[in-house]
Image (spheres, rainbow over the protein chains, first blue to last red):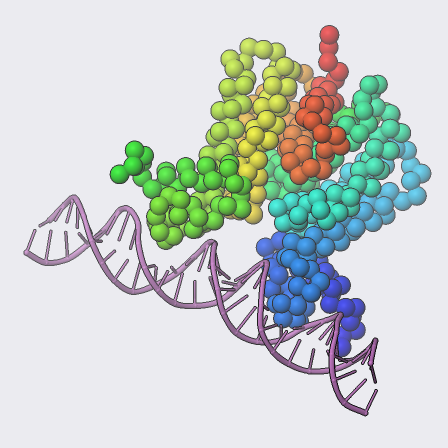
Amino acid sequence: MREEDAGLRARLIEVGVDLVTREGTRALSLREIARRAGVSHGAPRRYFPTHLELLSAIAREGFAALGTEVARALGDGRADPRAQLTTLGRAYLGFALANRGMYELMFRHDLLESNRLGLREASLPLFHVVVDLLTRAGLRPGVDPRIAAGALWANAHGIAQLWAWGSLQLTTGSTELESLLRATLEAHLGPEPR
Amino acid sequence: MREEDAGLRARLIEVGVDLVTREGTRALSLREIARRAGVSHGAPRRYFPTHLELLSAIAREGFAALGTEVARALGDGRADPRAQLTTLGRAYLGFALANRGMYELMFRHDLLESNRLGLREASLPLFHVVVDLLTRAGLRPGVDPRIAAGALWANAHGIAQLWAWGSLQLTTGSTELESLLRATLEAHLGPEPR
DNA sequence: CGAGTGGGTAGACGCTGTCTACCCACTTTG
DNA sequence: CAAAGTGGGTAGACAGCGTCTACCCACTCG
């Protein structure tokens, strides 16, 4: 009867996304989601046999959002690879910090039945973008770009997580975050050419 | 009456450490810890007013273990800084992978009341070791060693976490882990001198 | 001897995820 | 047109959880 009667399945995911971005992973109980969707607590079971599968579906939505965000930031991809990598890093960290709840969910493998539900695949295209940009940007000889991409990803992930946790905030202000990103990129690509 | 009657408080922590290293964070319910310690579920409250405080105490034990592990690996500190950094990285990743449950707990800030309970302080000395080693190893000019240390830490953390999650395992075998570590260190310190 | 108290027990409350029995509107079929 | 089947949802139960509260027992101290 709502304007959005797009089936309960979609509505549950929508409610979940809304809930996690606004109140964090803690609020994502099955019953609470059902409550906010206006159905009984048993209803979700028809579409998601278990709580984890619902959470995974919500997390997939997060990966999709991250993907489009990054794609939007990269634009037509005509800038040089190095600038694009910086842009990508900024977009990644920006997403992680703007949507902490969702980002946390996306990497809480204990909530997600990690492998089985295609979450790894959901983050794979982004990984390949990084590999591609790195090869085009030029690495030191003898460096496997997939290794470098893995290291870079891990670095961004670590920064986002430790920052969100507060472990990295020596000072306040996000200029330090930018410094961390720059330090990482320069380390992998050599100093900025002028 | 046991050979270990070192007070309930210590025993609860001990049981918790044992439990998390053997069965993961999932098993760390307050009632289960109490059960294994042989007391009623209300007993821990005398020493830990809330579940989170007990978990934090267990995590602190983890940070201590990580610290001594790293210290043991570094030895008398006479090797050159670069080699020590490699050793430290290996020890860090080794700890994270050998004690996945504990490592996960240590960085699950949603379980830990993060700031208030001195957990950040627990990891701070290790951070300073990294800063020290980096300055002695020599960075490119104009690089704040604290920033570099943060980036490095974030990188190690990210590698540990994504590896544990399975996101980084392009191939199997831990040689790839070693590659990731090497790539990171070489990126920050320049190629290995021969 | 009586009061006070540290340390633990036991039960209740509201919440959680899962399971099961039911039920109602709708479609399909004979 | 009636009967059977079924997709989609409700409602209640169950065990487990963290927290709170009332009690209680051994022990110490005045």
